[in-house]
Image (tube, rainbow, N blue to C red; front, side, top):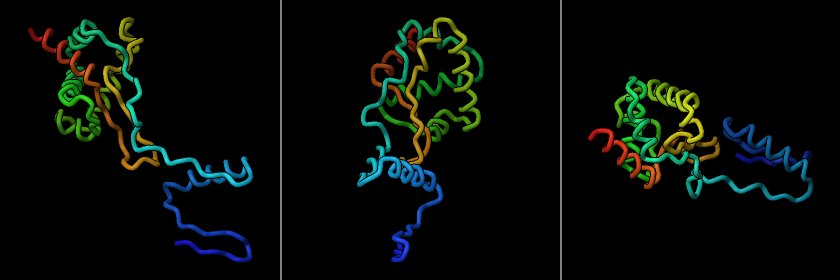
Length: 166
């Protein structure tokens, strides 16, 4: 719905509540810049090319990482197996939970535990997570968190798992 108030030179536009703060920020930025300013382009639903967020793990480091035995660690290993089976495919947190057979709460707890363990470990601290994660913004087409591995990461993980098992 758009209406125009002739006396005040204002246009009234209905905006979804979720976007109000973004519209207010945009208007404030336009006021700061002054003049005839084009609004910024809408960000993509996903980055065009996945950013290199995952650390560079060697197969030996991955094999060592795969030896964890806690229940949370087991969940993380299953998550990595699911991602490695579908390299380059962005899987939502919900999809990963279904495929691994865990609740969203347990999934989040397992990833948090993995993050704490990686930060505390002298070798793993600088490597980052052995997967990619993207959390969408409020202007993205699909809301949620997505996980994936590159083809190279998937091949290394699968090799590490095969060596650890055999």
